[in-house]
Image (cartoon, rainbow, N blue to C red; front, side):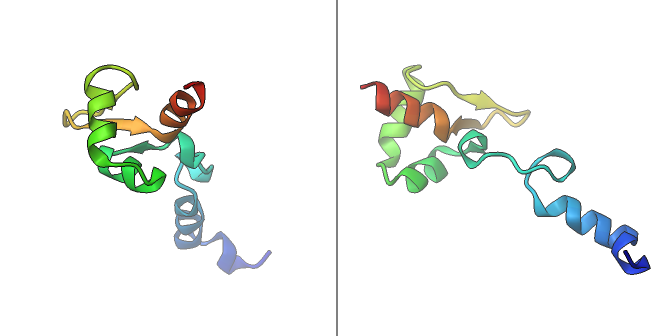
Length: 82
């Protein structure tokens, strides 16, 4: 390989290409999403995601700021069980 591919800038860019830790991509289904983003991705009404999360039907995740997030995998698993 040439010198250019090992430059710090290129190594950072290669690490940023994946959405996970150290450049390993996170499966889209396991990525934390806002209620609105999850609703748009699954083409479901926002209020249904919000209601299911509030009632505890689907698990929610909070990160330091208190905002609630969901995983598409949890929602799809619930939908396939019904």
